[in-house]
Image 1: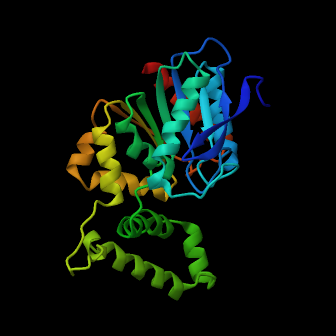
Image 2: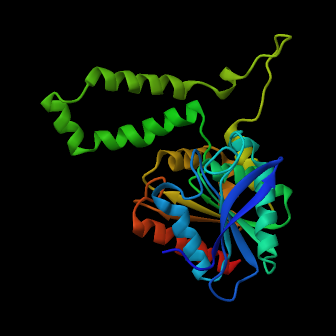
Image 3: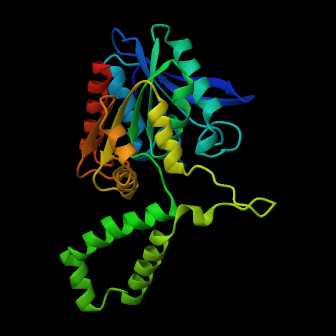
Length: 290
């Protein structure tokens, strides 16, 4: 049920109108507010209404929340530029929350999937952002995805009784399955620089990979970070694999500024009500500790 403290709000970004919902605090508000950055392609409600649930739960505990549609998503004008080019929308959304809730002096960016990655790119540039709550951050590369499939998907299939029943009953497309496995093995063995773009003079242009950019954002961000990791999600598994394969990243994740919160059975979008409630509760506790 909608709260009487919810209102539609619009703001201007890059000369276009963005639309969102402001959830004012239900009682005496704290000085920290939350801006939700939606993972795409999604609009401000989210899968299974997860962002509505999160925003109302936090507002009920005194935390103002603003959730909105990025450019080209939902009701907002324009074309979606991709999650790597959302800084202006994020900056204006923070402005909007603070304009409508004058008591808010500090902001937490709460992002899912590539919304979490966008938060990492933006946060180091804005001193108003004191915290990042990142759910299953997106660090997808072709090699990383293939390795995650091999390590997490195929192994779970081999240990599943249902897999062996399908195999012996003839219901499993063995050749198709093997083709997928060998394809992932080939991709996992590639080096990231193999796909580096070539410049006009014939030399290779080496750019930072997506994982490198996300972890650089985490490293340079001065505030605190809550990492929410689902146990039944290949995106989350790929992120944690990227951590474990690099000693510097592992040291960063183990640092006092980062709190890792795992939901062992949850899927990517926390589709069950109990998972949504757990995410909201852990987020509220973490914000209170800030």
